[in-house]
Image (tube, rainbow, N blue to C red; front, side):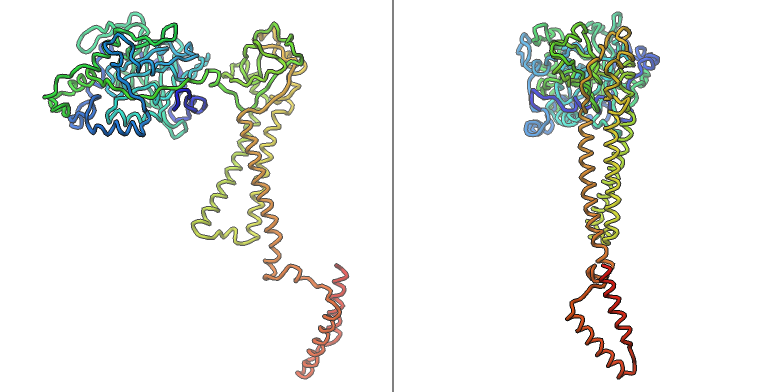
Length: 606
């Protein structure tokens, strides 16, 4: 990924609203009813302190400074790893300077005011996190405003601005995390942030939930040693995991993971990255210290002599100074995230000076939420930016205009196209596997199949055409009479709805990205229809030849032959009669004459 780009998924609505079976737009009243704050213990004794239990953790492969299989992880990461950058936490030397890695991980965001305060312009150290990840920044994720109903306000990739240790565990984890995206929802009171992580946004995918609690005034915490955690201040966060598949699960006995991320750097008013001295010095100490247990661990290869909790302390007290990562590019603006689709309406004044909108600070643009009408020419303006989620007024204004009918017709067309594709794939597969297609070996059957395909394609084509036309019908969203000259003002008087201007000048209605894709579907349907129709006609013209035993079609009909050929035929006929007489059989010349007369009459009929 280049430093100036962002993942295309940031502009994909499927990632902002995943269709995963367990994805939830959080009902915050339901969440608060669980009393989640009571489930956070006042004594910080994280469940992961008991994770290093069992013989599989006897080898020190899990340690952040592990030498197992080195330098293989470094070679893999440098040649094909997803995180090609590598820096030291101690890059600032004695701790007086800001490390270079901090500046590479913590980038500015033009929409930083949309980032929740606990995450805004901060670089976080995941203290007491036993996974091979150390520094995290959410600043260059994609963000958008909150709505009254509540929605996903942030989307990010764990593959960027997210560091891993350069050991086998860390490099392997980096490959996995690159495919993971995370949605962020925030409670109305700002006390809770819920992250939903997934790889596949379709019905096949599953969301893994992580919770964050924002420390409030009066909250006090102690660690398992009985020491007060004075460095935890209001506005800091606690990272919590209960049941990862159920966002509403928060019973104390279900708590599986917990730590307190610490801010080690921030962005100041001038846009510069500055370190947080207290937290950074603690981070630097743990990244550069000497564990002092070389003999007990057989040169840091074995933890057999350590208890489960001693292994945890050893891991979290001696982290890796070296970190691998990928810097994120500039995120998309919030106005690029909320985009409109099927149709887009443009309102323009008929004059050049815009006097009709001079005193109106906002103007509603069709499917767009109201936008500031500043320094734009009302005649030439075709505002093609983004839209926000409809409020109740906008739903009344725009969601009626035959859009449901249009959607139903489009869906019907899609179903028919799907049937056609399945049929064509079936016949192609049958021909490849058996070398023949019974259905198509007969020209009659082939013609019938082509006619069926043609009819279905024509029907699909008609449904798409009607769908597009419906938005222009009376009462449709693109119906000019619904706005001009005074219908809009009659339905939504400016006095009652001051946020919206009086649309006296309705200019045009255009299709958006989905509408253009619908047009391409129409073209595809028309092409399939034309090919199927042509094939059916060719097969139909060849059916008589098939039925006549291989003779040409005209051979089945009597024709007028030249006189010379007719005389020859008579000689043959007389010779035949003579032979018949000799054999005792008799053929009347009347019969022969009648046959010739019939042929001549037939020719005259033609």
